[in-house]
Length: 298
Image 1 (tube, one colour):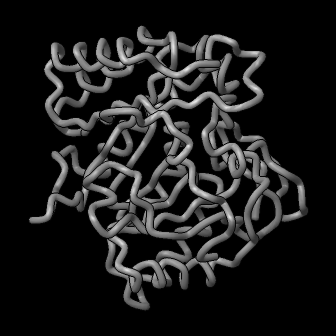
Image 2 (cartoon, helix red, strand yellow):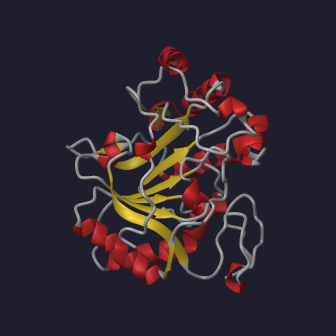
């Protein structure tokens, strides 16, 4: 394992020697916190049976407001081998999963590819979902070409200052644009494909989590994505932001998004012409969206 440069941080940590990367990962194994059927993704991902979701510990972005902070900082989880991960994929398929959903997988990409290839040989037939923050390196994404069927990616910021304040990543806007371009290229620049049940089989979904007081940034994200890709991608606008303990340094984020803020974002998207998209309705800003990272299924 060479010094790590899998994510845009390129921290060059010698993980094989035990050095911890910016993402929190160290060692030669894969740290996972949960593998189970998950019902809280977009309808075309979760469906009625649930998405076969594997939550990987650690994250190259580590936003201050992260809803999955227990694993984003590589705290919760259990170390496993690629061989065990391959078995987990097949176990999720046996449980009736609609797909295999890889959550925050970036820093384990080579090991995941190895595990998937082994699982394919052993009978894995489900679509593969790469569920990421959008802070991706094109070279790393290229390892996934022909393997990933669906990119479920965040696009958090079009403002470098906001990206720096909340994610210590002023390069996020440019990096996310380049990553999204590569994802769309891998899908052949075509519109998404669905089966007769309405489940996505191939395509790109771009998520944006509206932050309180950041409607302007949200509109800029929607405008960029829609004006660049039109109906080639689906845009998922989320209002589920939940302030967690420890936000004193960022008091502007220490509240939920108001109904008015979210409605203004939706109105903007409609006026822009967005047709392929998902919205959240009702009181979604609840901690029920955060699963227990108790190593279930690992």
